[in-house]
Image (tube, rainbow, N blue to C red; front, side, top):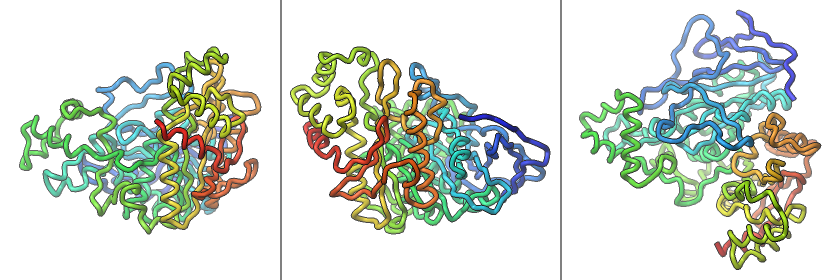
Length: 506
């Protein structure tokens, strides 16, 4: 656990020299922290440009503004009843192209591995400090890697496709992804000043962040800016995460009476006014604010979903870790987990699987013999099959190694709760012990050591194998080797193949 033994921030130390100017950070224990560094700037609906140079020393002591999102049209981002994913609020602004760095090697020439994190929230919401577990101090302190977390434009700012209204908006449907390319380019140009190795950069992300990692692999402009990738609960299935924003743009323009000669009015509108108009268009289209936004393929800057277009041959040498949570989006309501007698278990299974309940329970026990069979009622039926399809296609089209995992940790909350979507974040960031609802004696610390250690080892060498973890073998279609992290961490070999077959009924 974190103990601040020293905190240093002087006028002249620690000060980092970047291409734009000098930034003052602070030393927290043995980790140097720099927050809110501008990696680019951008006008609304236009491509990112290099950040403005500045004289003197600029403070990098606190986080920068985050994308406004469309929070005025959804419920607040404060966690309401979930102590497992505690959330934080921060101030918002359209000048959100900033990043944060944690490093133990500031002022040295050691060139440590760099891990660049893409936050979740689809392509619509989220930011680098939305979740408590996004803090990079523990990962940096424990494994001596340089951690970078990136903010960028989202939803209408990052993905509203206005390309039909003029060449000046040709890339408006992928601006959020172009921001991430700009951030990776900034890392290449500046990370040595923070003790990082620009020749050893791992991009990683969860949920929407995993989809951003996948999309970056389909962008020629990102080639050479990263060398390994980790996709957590974020692969894309064929036909999913299609970009609908060109349709929204047409509805928006019609409602506001805009055409090609005056479409630029959108650049000057008050953000809230624009957002309300966009929401009106989304509702008119019968959609919601989450499903609209995704990068718009143009065949050049962004090739498209690899499950539809294939993986670009230029990424064939990029090693991958790809995985998901055993529960993901199908957890049993917490109130149903208070009494785990035989009658309740059967009721839960029957409610979800009907006449197939016994077959599901038997297949689950074969796959996970150490777990309560009642958890068969909350097994994910969407992300896991998509991950398997993704892995199988990747193995056919690329030579680099691929590693698969499942996260299957039972939190003690309310008598036992199998963690779903976002649950793995606390562990792979080595922050699980800061979430009281996760504490289990002799288990929580071990699992976060295993996951975070594997992620760090992969960033260093391209293999997740290291001290304290069973041998993690590469994924192959015929063996489906899979590291299962949880109360028992084991490597499975075709462990859930029969379970997935049973699920084909649904």
